[in-house]
Image (cartoon, rainbow, N blue to C red):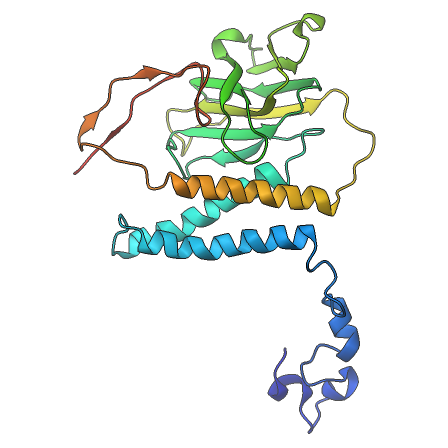
Length: 296
């Protein structure tokens, strides 16, 4: 709706006469419904943060298409565009929609969400944390051959975490006959029974991992997190949204800065190395990593 031929011509089809202008938007009333007048939030903190995020997305198109390592084929271009929106989705879910006062786990890596050093047979979920609060984590194992949760500390501005606060995995947990399990995330584990991770003052997020033998048919872990003392009310402000946009922007820029990953010598695998407590990124503290590439 919006051209003279369809809605607002002088010959009249009952639309142009009733709504007022040739754009088909209802004259002044239509403009107001779209934020007309002085522009509303334009020029404010949230508007500037929004504009910077949108501009970054546009620049990413040139980055992936013109990168020295870019391939001149349709599959590369298809995956490149999907990658842009994969890291955008992760940034929005983690830093714009995330609420440490009343968190929930959101998918960040899986068979259909691929970025960074992802694993085709694994699922990762993210939840923001407030180190002054206590959380109860519960779940059901499903078909996972390994599951863990790692708490990370460090910057809370969209950058990768700088250290591992603590980890817990299936070897530390007791499972009911139906696979149910539970543990705590808290600044004072001594006040709770059962497994727990102590939240240090710099704790910012938790990431779960579960590996399955066949991601296409296996039942993944069901993860849930609940704040024991959530706030009684909730209000979102433009300052909160602007902060979330800036964090998401930082996240996207940092991901672009390390993409594409270096492949090294093909058909070789580096020696495994354990993850130190002080680390860059969201590595698992209870795992050893060995990177390699292949050429068929």
